[in-house]
Structures are given as structure tokens and as C-alpha cells.
Amino acid sequence: MKEKIWLSSPHMSGKEMKYIEEAFRRNHVFPLGPNVTGLEEDIVRMTGAGHCTCLSSGTAAIHLALILLGVKQGDEVICSSFTFSASANPIAYQGATPVFIDSESMTWNMSPDLLESAIKDRMSKGKKPSAIVLVHLYGMPAQLDKLMSVANAYQIPVIEDAAESFGSAFDGKSTGTFGEIGVFSFNGNKIITTSGGGAMVSANPEYCKKALFLATQARDAAPHYQHSHIGYNYRMSNICAGIGRGQMEVLSDRIAKRRENYFFYREMLAGIPGISFQNEPDERYFSNHWLTTILIDPGQAGGVTREDIYTDLARLDIETRPLWKPMHLQPVFANVPAYTDGTSERLFRNGLCLPSSSNITDEERRAVVDAIRHSLKH
Ligand SMILES: *Cc1c(COP(=O)(O)O)cnc(C)c1O
Image (cartoon, rainbow, N blue to C red; front, side, top):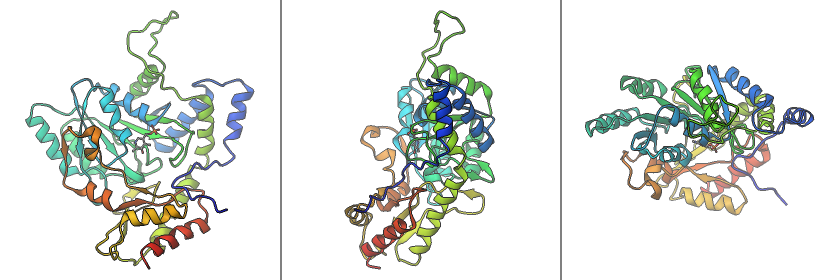
């Protein structure tokens, strides 16, 4: 029987086991430990970030980033609307209100113009946003030059949710290193994985030190378990970090393969009316192309919709996924402020993520292309 073709599956290299075996041999089967420290060093080296703290998930990293920037009950925090819910949920953990900003159509990420008008409008209503959660979706860097200059002009700190863009860069600089704090995820579906995990990076060593303190139950420097802060158990395990260290050895191969998937699909689907891709706008943008995503315009595609292709491929055991449903359309965020112009709604309506694993075979990729062409009668 043919195997299911996955959207984005874990891809082990074999280099993970030496780190895990070493941890077993030394009985380092606990949170933190040498693999965690080693992974933090690897991440600092790769990203050029000053400092790194590995954590239990990307979500935990966003939560701690908000705490470190002083976000508290009743605050407003600006957030990309077109994203996975984990970008926004930690804002609610803090009792703060997300303020959602729509995408622009060039990178599909936060619109600098809408960001600026939202900041002005919130300030005119008497509340300056406490922070900005800025997402680089599917690996594509946002318009970092413009967004950072708006954020800097209003002196609002930026948290970069680079969960999907590990290894991506803008102007030669890693995503995650532009804002005050950057966040990565090593969940099983991301470009590299620790099975589950995340990390925070910052140029400011105090943030990373304080993150570790909060992530380890906020113990004061006393042997008798004294606490003057509310703490969390957000540590990364030393075993998971061992997987991550092995994965870091092959990160550049993983990025090359994901990018190659994108070029393959783009070439094989070229010239079909109504199909377009999320492309790097110019040479300043380097996307890891974590997922290859397409837009289907039914008006030009002979009436074939995103839903048709999704259903046809599912029948062939090929996993695809609609683009993220924007946060301002989510029932759970129905009553929060949003600054929108219809861009992410259009992307959501017409967009589909294609199987993009780094261990996808040529035969599988061809099967995906054949199935899409068949749906489009092309
Ligand atoms: C995966 C993801 C996260 C959350 O990361 P976890 O490690 O799964 O908690 C946050 N934001 C975005 C955009 C993601 O894709």
C-alpha cells in the first residue's frame, strides 16, 4: 500500500542518537543539562543572536517574552492576524487584549501601513500598545525594515514570532534577531524539531537570564525554596535538546530541501491559470520555505476552488491544509479590536499548504503535482 503523503513530517538524520546516548550514559535524563546548553550555543552561532534560552515550546517562549516586556492585565498587544493561534494565546494568558493587524499581499505578513494606523488609533483612544508580536509566516520574512521603523518611531518593543522561519533572513540577518526578543519553535512539524520545544533569543542577556529563572519555577537564590515571583515549568528536557543538537547539524540541508520543494512546485505548476505562490519579493528576503503555499483563484482556474483541491488530494491520502484562519475571524477573538483590509481573508479563502517535508520523495512530489493538475483539469 502507498504511504500517506504528509504536510510536514519530522525528519531525523541519525546524528541525534549520539547526543541522546551520551545523556543516557551519564544519566542526564532531566530538564536542562549539557545538551540544552549545547543547543543554545548552536542557536546563537546559527542566528547571530546574542543570547538564547531553550524552553519547552514556542508558545512558552512567547509567553515569557510578554512577561519580560512587562505586559500585564488590561494592556493591549498588537499581533499579526494571519497566524497560528499560538502567537496570540499568550497575550490572553497575561490578561491583555490582542489587537490584530492584517497582512499585506507581498509577504503575507503584517502590513506596515495598518500597523502605523492601528498604533495611532489606539493611542488616540488613550492606550499605547505595550508590545508587538510580529510573525514570519511559512518562513517568509515580514517587511522588517518598514515594520521595525514604525515600532521604533513609537518606541514599542517587538517580539518576533519566528516559529516557522528558523533559518530565514532579511538583508542577511536572521529572523528573530530584529526585535527585542525572538522566538523559535522546534515542534514536530517545524523545519527542525526536538519533538517538542522552543527557544527565545535576544541581544539582551538579562532577558535570557530572567527567562530561565521564570521557566524554572522562579526560585530565589536560597536553599529553602523561597519565591518572590510566580514561576513556570517551561524548561526544555536534556533528551529533547539532544534531538535538537543532531538536527542542527543538518539544518542547512533541511533548508535547502524545503526551498527546493518550493522551486519544484513552482516550476511544475507554472503557467496554470489561477495558481500563484508566496514568493520572496526581492533579494533582501531569504525564506526557509518551511511550507510551500499556493493561492487558487477560482475565477481563473475554471471554477476550481481551494476546497476542491483539498478534497481531491485527501482522497488520494495526500495531506494539504488551508492557510491559517486569521485571528480576527476566530470565534475566541470575536470581540477584540482588529485593523483589516480583507487581505488575510482573501489569502485564507484561496490558500493551500502543499506537502513540504524535507524527507518527501521525488515520486511523492510528482504525485502531488499530478493530483493538483488533475483537479484543475490541466
Ligand atoms: C508552531 C507555531 C507556534 C508555537 O510553537 P509551539 O512550539 O508549537 O508551541 C507559534 N507561532 C507560530 C506562527 C507557529 O507556527
